[in-house]
Each structure stands twice: as C-alpha cells, then as structure tokens.
Length: 295
Image (tube, rainbow, N blue to C red):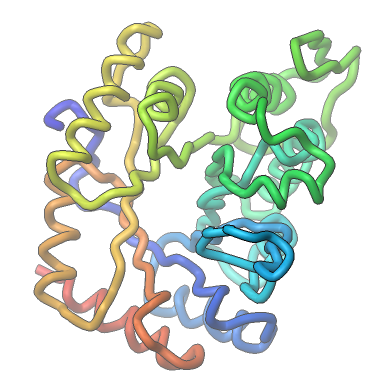
C-alpha cells in the first residue's frame, strides 16, 4: 500500500461507546469533555435508527438488535458541537435509508455548527428490517447510494440545484445556510469488492473493516485501481482505521503501527467490547491506549 495516503503522524480520535453508555446524557457529556481534555482530535459515532426484535425475525443474525442503544448521529453531533471543539465523524451514516436532500441539509448544519470540523462517513448498511421501518427499498441501496453522493455534493456547493436522476429529483432548489466545507468530505465504509470500487470512484476517505495485512492490501489495490480508472489520484483517498483496545498495550500499539505503515492518516480508538463499565472506565482505557501510542 505504498501509494495510500499518509500525513506523517495520524490524527487520533475515539469511537463513542454508545452501545455501552446507553441513553445516559450525563455520561455522554462527561465522556465528550473528557475526550477533549485528553487531547484527542475527533469523535466517531455509529448509526442505527431502529433495531430488529429477534423474536419477530427468525434467523436474524445481525450484531445489533432492538435492545442495542444508538444515538441518532446528526442530533448527537448538534449537541456535541455545542460543548466541544472535536472534529465529528459519522462512521457510518446509513445514507440510502434516508431522504437525500434532508441528509444533505443535516450534514450542512453540523458542518456549520462545528466550524467545518465534520467528516460525513456513509455506507449502504445491512439491515433490511431497518430499511422497511424507514420506508426505503433495501434492494436498490447500492445503486441509489452513488447518485445520493453526487446530489449531496451539488447541494453543498451550488446555490440552486436541478437534478433529474434515476432515483432523485430536485428542481431549482438549494440549501441555506450552506456548509463551511464545500463540499463536506464524504467517507465510505466498505467491505466488499463492489464497495471498494465505489470508494475509489467517489470517496474522500475510507474506513477499512479489517486488520492490517494481506486483506487490507488487497482491498486497497481494488480502491487504487478504481480511482485511477476514474481519473483520480489514489493518494487523495485518506484512511481512518479503527483500532480496538482490549487491555493489551503491546498488541494495540503494534496494530496501530501497522495501520500507520499502511498509510492511515487517522486512527480511531474503539473501547467497546473490552468489558468496561461506565464512562470512567472508558476514559481510563482511552488514556491507556493513548499512552501506548506514544513513542
């Protein structure tokens, strides 16, 4: 992956552990302020609007269900923009299950509220139950996704937009106020060859879903080839790698180092799944992870 982007020392951020801190607003505030005080650069949050009731969906094998807590990311980011100066990152916002123009409007507002410190990570998702509940078709999500990104970028950069596409129609309409970043960076979470090619064609950045090694290199090769075919420079596509903390400083630092060597310009520390209880434990784990990354 010698041609992947690098900026020297990666920016270090965190993944908000919302499945473990639940709906506790005091914990949310304490966590965000603690993360900022510790000097982290960004905060990433995942997105699910509803979860499936496994008792009603035989054979459902998704990792999240009706009892898993998720904050709505755009509302969450509006709150966080008012109490921190962190860069905010959706990792990822499931775009095709939403109205495109509304998603673009919400993103523009978050970008404005954060002073241009917003990366919009998007993906197509995997949960048909969620698509049904939101009144969107699951089967065309990949085809619709490409057009959505094109339309959002136009809405973020043009005063008045007319777009008559396969899935989207806008006639002489525009957003006000406009975002600070024009356009807002669009990142894609991808874990299939078709999605890797989409990253190469369309994305400003990529969230890899695998550890460093042969699979990561193979995925990057597909991304780089698709970028070149689209007339883009692969080195313009940044990488934000998620590194999970499990209490083993050496192993954590080694994986982070491998991601750095592979060209990651951002690292996001995930403390979910580490057996932690409460905001203080998560902040202590982040401090230990931060210490492990120091030279």
